[in-house]
Image (cartoon, rainbow, N blue to C red):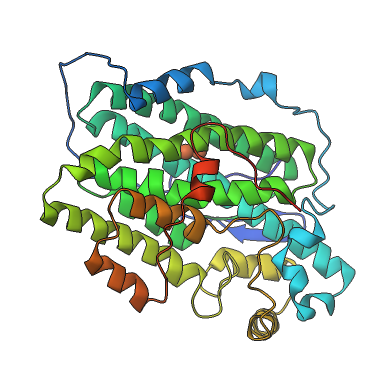
Length: 374
Ligand SMILES: [Fe+2]
Ligand SMILES: [Fe+2]
């Protein structure tokens, strides 16, 4: 079993297991300024949110019954295929020893799965927050189903991390992104931060993991989690879209600005200064991945920069999608959150706004169409 951090504050706690160690994110406690909204109009209509709620009820699942937990998982065998890993595109990577390569892939995959786990905990809290702050009965019902979904997602990724006996701390940018969402003062911001941005990020990452993994248990977990996430992304559209349309311009600008700031957290941490996703110099967890794999961090980042300069890191592996370009930005544009003013800000940070909805349409609604792997 992986050593896990539980209970009281554990500042700087080091988790050791065999020849690897990590420093876990300390437990955290804070207050948020959110209002609580009672509503005494219990009418349950026939709208899209009601429809989503019905589908959420019908598609609940019990992970104990549905998933093949007795699958043998050997974490020393890579859980993902070589061709789906961006690291295999780096000439530097192929100069490492076989042991270093295998250890690195095992640990970097564990680090990614740990982000799924920690991110799901954040989603659990944001969904609960929407339940008590949204002023609409059907939306409260729906957010309650999402809260249950997210609890199940924390449960399944926690059990899987136990199975591979490896866990990594939460990436600081992901924590900042979810904290920014949870500390906001309006339920609309919580839904933008979670249902449009974090869940767009997650849906893309889950799709890519589904295509990458060779582990049947992880494939089954990810497929079922994606079905739930695909409903969650729809909720951001079908409920919040009409709400945003009715807002005054200044309020819509405030939300557009909030969305930009949240996207900018992701862009600065994962796409700038030579970072490629979780492979970032400013992520202490990733540096521990390198340490645990016996790889010098300066050599690694130099190798990654060389591969990027040679144009080797741009194309996504087959079947993989780009969360920002294919899911998050189109979702924000669709509900009117890319105003002319913030569009300029996206351009300033080098992010062209993409509005093509076809991948988003394919992935949302509760029955994601998996992108073809070939
Ligand atoms: Fe989730
Ligand atoms: Fe979700």
